[in-house]
Length: 420
Image 1 (cartoon, rainbow, N blue to C red):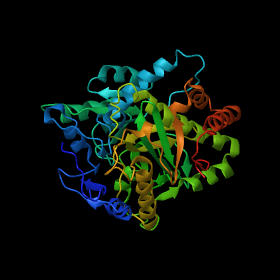
Image 2 (tube, rainbow, N blue to C red):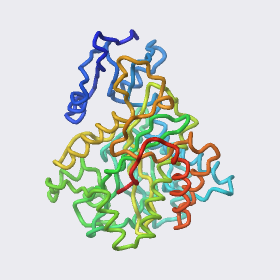
Image 3 (cartoon, rainbow, N blue to C red):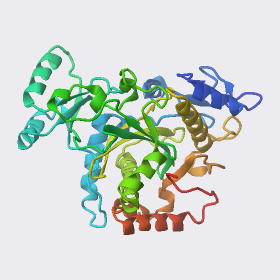
């Protein structure tokens, strides 16, 4: 691909989705619209990223170009591959007696490939509920819950028999005792920025939120097919009669933290948030060996986590293209600031003028509302990672903070505490 320089050395942008939160930030940074063959920064869909990095197309990105996805991001963001990679990683971790990390994804099988294994597990736990999700869809599409083997047999006969190529699904143990607030189920959307996988560099955004269902939760068999009870996806909940367009069924993460401190106590809340930090880091570590660490790439993930009634966190899924649509005014403010800070951390303003050698060779002048969650270059012996793995007690949490603080003391960037 030709070198996209221009006389003014202005960064030229290109985007497949011209959402207002993107365009506004490009304009505020003084960037100019580019074209198909003249751009420095490309906010691309995952489909076009696949096309760019397809060797048959002969495209080679140069030192003045950045894109918003890693070539094989799907190793973490496709539900089946995420489960496979994390399962493999957890088996390897179990060999290290210094690491204490319990399962953080529910028991999961791939259908139709693992159907026999699933049947065996189902018969061992005949009263369990299971949730089925298509591996390649988002926004709650195609999801349903079962509690009888006959339901999946009937579904598979009708579904797969008519398909020339069977669509893959994952089926997971349903967390049927979620933590409830106001009687309603919720999950968390946390934004995580990875600028480099080798060495791994992870930033976490302060302004995540809880997404609530419109209808009070019940695990009654009569309501298994009611998405407004079970599925927190905004794309689903906003179609319900009880949807509140003012707050959009969302609650800022700091409000959730204060609520938990008041109801469960400070120690239990700190333990939960430390556990979620560990889940994020270990999820990225799980795919580190297989991700193509192209220096022209970064990724802003949307991590979705669920908290159960025992204050244990579970990873639901990881999104490669978290929604930039804004359903409320607060949503618009938060997502505009999110993109502002993603660009601050991941994209140098000199991109149109000076060669970019990769995130490991560049220190952002400011982080905005991002904070460094894990920097592998500051953890050569893995001490911080092991401390995060065992952060299920007050001592473990203190070890995380102390270890991270000691190693980051030499950094020139001043960062505020996470989650505040």
